Image (tube, rainbow, N blue to C red; front, side, top):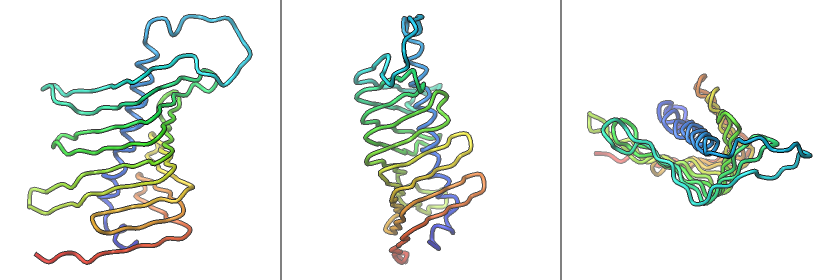
Length: 205
């Protein structure tokens, strides 16, 4: 716990991929919404929670001005539900390269995004992984991962919550908790319930 409080920047870097998930999910949503024929008027029917269109085995990529891959989101199937105006993606996988070429990946059995992408819920084997990076001074920031069966990202307010057990791993350090609430604006992290940690001593050079 003490180690996490000292690593404010690392927590911020870990949360950024979750914000990216919302952006990518929103991009996918607008992609399917812009497909010809999907927005044609339909006869009024009783509201039912049934998808009005599907996308199978899709991949959405974005590139920088030099043609280098910036981000990608993949899924086995996406479904849009008109009654709730939500997009559901199965077996979602995401990856993002920042300006320095550093890679962050994320995956889950399912992702659910609201209409404007401001909220994204990841369920089932949700994992966010930021690979180890090396600073200009040669210092190494170890690999960081955030795992749980449920992760709820609020993109606009930069909050991340989970009412189910979570696991935070930084290098060889491991912390688990029953639930989590993170507010990036206030740099506030709350781990509740049974909080346990294994903190390994830093290796001497």
